[in-house]
Image 1 (tube, helix red, strand yellow):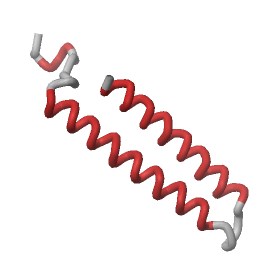
Image 2 (tube, rainbow, N blue to C red; image 1 turned 120 degrees about the horizontal axis):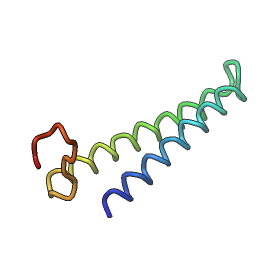
Image 3 (cartoon, rainbow, N blue to C red; image 1 turned 120 degrees about the vertical axis):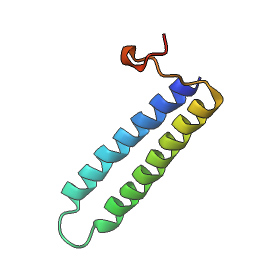
Image 4 (cartoon, rainbow, N blue to C red; image 1 turned 180 degrees about the vertical axis):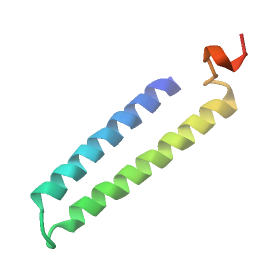
Length: 73
C-alpha cells in the first residue's frame, strides 16, 4: 500500500513540474510569476511528503532494501 502512495505522489510531482514549466513558458515576462511560484510550492510540498512517506515506510518495516549488493539475503 505504501508503494502505491509513493508512486502517486511521484506522479503528482511530475505533473506539478510540467505545469510549472508550462506556466513559465506561457507567462513569460514579469507579470505571470505567481502561478510558477505556486507550482514550485506544490512541488516542494510533494517532495517533502515523499521523503516523509519513505521514512515512515522504512521505520515501520513496510519498505526494505532489496538490492543484491546490500547483503541482506
